[in-house]
Image (cartoon, rainbow, N blue to C red; front, side, top):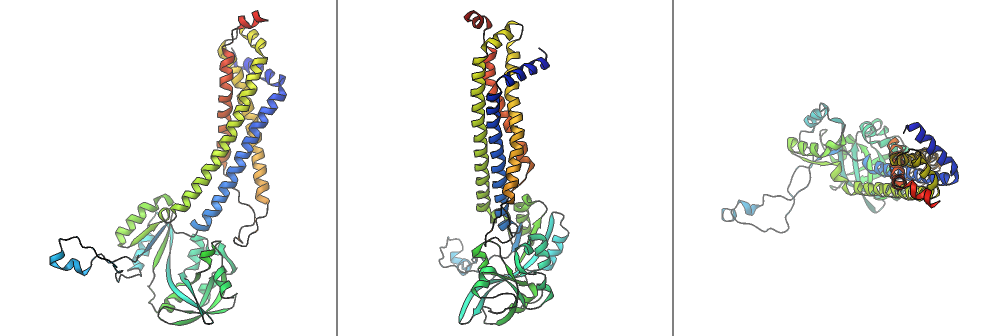
Length: 419
């Protein structure tokens, strides 16, 4: 039978029971709208949380780790060379913490086409002198221009300007929690001391807030030259190189390659944040599970409505088959009905999902822990809308297929004889 005739019959059946059709379409609309809203919000939340950690984390970190010395004196004694020696209280070796030949390493990274950028870093453990109290902290020597370009450093400086670390000598940016402990603000002079007892005075030119309290309670930032001066080290003294790649998925392989080539330790972002990424994956998985459950529930509603329609339209089905329509034609009519409900309800659901997401995106989100976030996070990823309409069509198709199969097997003789 011609497809146009089958579609017209499906349309007539839909309009004849328009209230039931509207109920079924409303179920699909609600499911798709909630599916889009839930995924958009949860994905936006994941992006927000990822940004707090991953934006500040290098894809590959090159450094020298502190390790126990594997070459113990007992291993050099001939009598014990072929023995398995158990040694307790193994101390770390006197390995160099600073990177050896860091200039050559950075030159090689600059011509590596897999590298988006890199920045040197010098970290020192210090004490902030607050009267008679010493507060433990970490002093990070950075290149503020590269940090802003590669790791969004400026977005976390809530007061002051990070570029002034290069423009003014002996300056520092404090973490918000650390600044509160020191009762320091812009322009305050803070005194620090090193493990060797050296004391320095630094001027506060900014406040840094990452949103992670434990991090902000101890971290501070200054220029690399200032840290070198504090530690009384030469100009080539750095303790790490943070590398950002063009393709983050290459990080594990490149970390192993760099560790072997440059004979130092390398940590990739996947290893450093494996637990965090697991949490993001689970949140996304839950969102998809809830959204798909809503669609399946809507599918059962369509299934029930089509079953009732078939029961009520037994006479019409019998007449169709008696006038030459095959079982396949009847099946096609009811599948057209189901898919039409899915298309209409799905498209309206996408529109409502977008509207609800836009409304949530405008709701103020005020928290002292995240001053750079102004509204609730929403991710308008078009893939969510594509997945939503595909699931809508699949769910409604199968919801209509089973009743359609039942309708196609109706014997018109039995129905007409019964009447």
